[in-house]
Length: 326
Image (cartoon, rainbow, N blue to C red; front, side):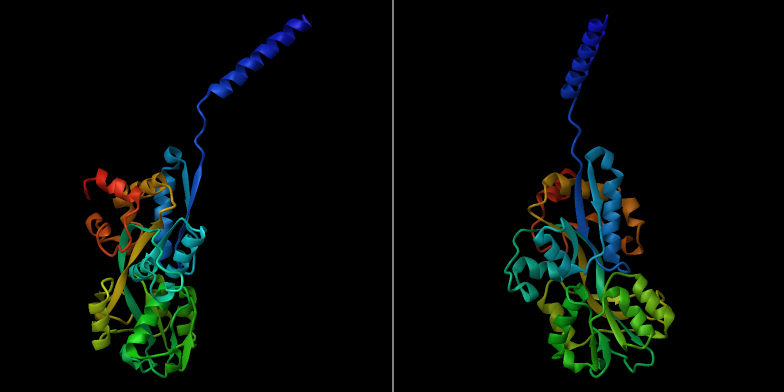
């Protein structure tokens, strides 16, 4: 009896083992990391929103997504180059310079592995100055305390370009502060700086904080130097920050800016990029409700404007399926 029992158990175990080996293999879970920006900025919301769409379908495609806060555009490019990031949100001007190896990417040379995915919202250069600072126009910056942005951020990159156009250096200012986006509104309120600059979509939490905690004005960025920048560089456009969006700022303010772009690189698997793009556009109405800056997005502009690098194969595949490109 014992031998019969053992034989039956062994036979059952063999059947179980055979069933295990013959069962379909469970698809391996894959992970993607998206570089964003400061937690008060729209870049952070972009990355979190893309991940939210991707993770809704994880049971189907086995891709999990996370989007940590980072130092911004330049940091995201460098993170993708080093392999720490798979995708990132990058200003259109930074995308251009990284792909062509210009500006602060000159030493590294052109990064031809960069691939475009889609363009997001417009991002005007937004200058906020304390009402008691005496600053009424961007040209009033000399001898003032100005937060020019942290190294590696898109706003610092744009500010460097504008400073060159204006003939300014850091010595032009009484103080050239280098706080990141999350710190500058508090510095303005505490009277540690007279003005802050931010390249960002609107409405924005940091600008809201700055104009709520202290009397502050959004300052025009116009003039012949700015006109020349817009004429020379294809990724710059004139912008208007609507009046009434922030306390004490009822009039429209003229400035210029760039666009936020979503990028990756050629080393990221085509299927992963395809699923990320599909997750956004298959749920586009839901996606647009995740932030007011997304409200006026439309696919036609998102896949054609502000993109310097070639489309990633995964993105192009989805757009062809939709009949948006040939």
